[in-house]
Amino acid sequence: MAMEDEKMAAAAAERHITSDELAKHNQPSDLWISIQGKVYDVTDWLHSHPGGDIPLVSLAGQDVTDSFVAYHPPSAWRHLDRFLIGRLSDYRVSDVSKDYRRLVVEFTKLGFFERKGHVTALTLLFTCLLFIVSVYGVLFSSSPLVHLLSGGLMGFLWIQSGWIGHDSGHYRVTTSVWSTRFVQVLTGNCLAGISIAWWKRNHNAHHIAVNSLDFDPDLQHMPFFAVSSKLFNSITSYFYERKMNFDAVSRFLVSYQHWTFYPVMCIARINLFAQSVLLLLSKKKVPNRGQEIIGIMVFWVWYPFLVSFLPNWTERVAFILASFAVTGIQHIQFCLNHFSSSVYVGHPCGTDWFEKQTVGSLNIDCPPWMDWFHGGLQFQVEHHLFPRLPRCHLRKIAPFVKELCKKHNLEYSSATFWEANKLTVRTLRTAALQARQIGSPVPRNLVWEAVNTHG
Image (cartoon, rainbow, N blue to C red; front, side, top):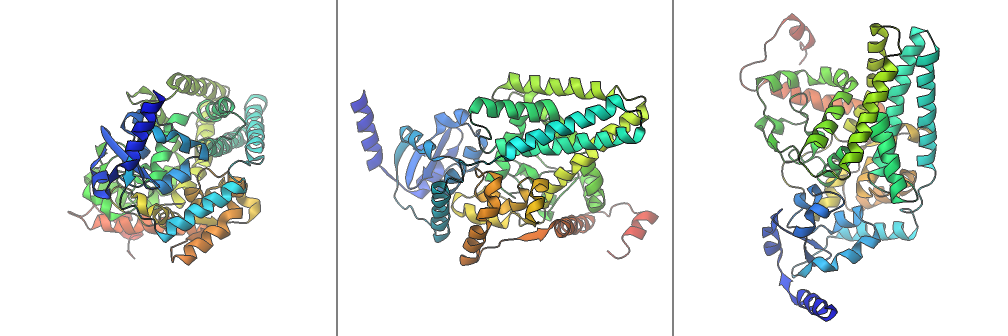
């Protein structure tokens, strides 16, 4: 049996495959990829892939070396040989990719991917403290102001749990797989009501196809928001598997999106609750579905139960709105990193992966003492290039990434938090004004005229 395997491997090594032939195998039922000049048939592995099927389907029929080294530890390489079917005869590597892969190797040698610091432990402690103080304020105070502040603290708790969920979706935040899984479900499902399975599925799709209007779910917010007039063509979302219709309702809402952006962010949590439930009740493959559902149920028991201790409905509604509004800060942070960056329509391309990650991301300039507030998102470019890297190292590697971008004349964008907000609103306003020019005009009134007198 071993000899037969060796013969098959030898035959596969002798088979030469062109990029054109590779590109033909780009369907879930027939899926090939290339990594460092070797071609692999991963059709049967598609539904067993720990990162889900979306990354493989999005990059099917292409060279995926850069994205593979970004998302996989060195131990993953030993699993590839069983899928080997040949070698890419016209394999080429760009100078950018060569330098990028050297950085990955250097950071690996320095132990950056393994040394995680104490960020997760400190964040967990902070989250527990916020939970205790918030619950104490509800149960042991009769002051409406304290109840309102407790709601705000609950929202701040959700932000901190979000950072833990984000980190654990990219790398092991504890010493073992099971303890990382426990932290994920506890902080995500149980404390925040967000399915970690939904988060990983959505976030993996975003990373692979950053700022692709039809593949990146983080830019697919119709009918409420459109970051580009390209969305006015009612393109199809490959993530949601439906057409994003730009109809009269969408056009009306998009026409005012630069005014509605912040109010909508204050209640954006509702969308995450809904998306989590929809995925868990769908027929899509969800790892550990039972754990996910139990975790969500825990949240929907304790949170309404806590709110019920407030003395009247006015304070209950105020508590909920305060928690939603504060956690809205995190939703805004997610938008700032990409809304104002370059976008495109079409499949993500494996051979310009580095370039797409840099041009599609915006860093937030801040002093080191504010890193806790941004949860690593302030180094969005670095995070997208090295997603497995613990956030405690992102500031260290930023000069190397900046130098690499400078060497290859690639865009490296950054702005302060307030500048990023202005850039985002400007992007939304530009698309809003373009939407008003399409078809019959949006109904106008005196308020509309007053607000838009100067365009």
